[in-house]
Length: 358
Image (cartoon, rainbow, N blue to C red):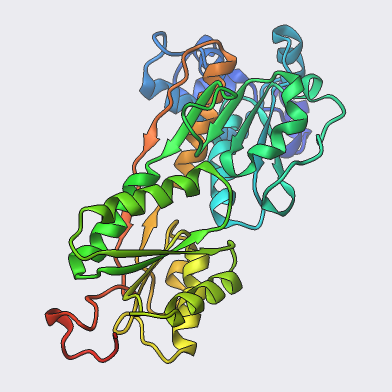
C-alpha cells in the first residue's frame, strides 16, 4: 500500500471529497462532459442520456462543485431566491422540492422566502439583494413581496402569472383554465345546473383566471345558473362561505365548485352541519389535489397540479435566463381526478331515488 493509499484508508469516509473525476468515472463520461453538464452548457455537445447519467451520478455521490472558485470565475453568487405566499401550504412545499432539485443539479443554492400572511409586501431579506442573489423565482400570489427587490434589477421568473407581465424575464404556468373547464364540464355532464363558485378571496392573476374560466364554461349551458361566494384560503372560511351559499334565498345549489381543496374541506363540513349528504344532496369539488383531498370522506373530486414539475420548470427557465439563452416557458397540463364527492343532482332522472335538492 502506498503512502497516499494509507492516508486515504485512514480517513473517515465523510471527509473524502468527491471530485468531478469520480463523477465522470461513475457516469462513464469525460471530466469535460461533467463540467459541461453541471455548468448547464451541455446542449448540442453532450447527449441527453449522458447528461442525465452525470446528474444522477453527482446526486448519488454527493458531489458538490467548488462554488467559491466558480463564483469568482463567473462573477456569480450561485444563489437564487424562491418567493412563495406561505411555507405551510403543501403545494408550495412541493414547488420548492422541484426547484431545489434542479438548482442543485446546476450547482446553485436556493433560499426560500415566504410573503407574510400569504400576501402583501415583504421586507427585503438581504441587505443588498443584488450583491447576494443571482435571480428570483416568484409565485404570482406573492408578487407584492417583490417590491423591495425590484430596485436590484435581478433576473426574474414568475410562476402562475400573467404571461404579459413585463416584470418577468419568463413566465411558467399551469393550465389552470383547462383544469377549471374540466371540472365544470364534469359537473354539467352529471346534470348540474345550479353551481356556486366558492372563489378564493385573493387578488391574484390565477384566481381571476379561474373565475373567468368558470363563467365561460357555463355560459353556453342551457339553464345553468352561476353564483359566486368569496372565501379566504382556510377551512373555516370555506365552511362559512358554503353555509352562506347553501342557505341563501332561492333554489339551493346542487354543486359547490371550490378554488382550492382547503376551501372544499370547509364546504364539506358546512354541508354536513346542515344535514346534507355529499354527493347525494350536493356535490363538492376542490382544486390542487393536496393530501387533504383524500383525507376527507367522501374523497374529493379535484384537479391535480404537477407541483414538483412546476418548480423544476421554473428553475430551468431561470437557469436559461441567467445563461442568456431563450427560456422555455411551458404551460404544464393538469388532470381531473374524479372521486366520491360528485354525482348527479338529486332532482335529475339519473338520481331520482336520492333525497335532497330543492
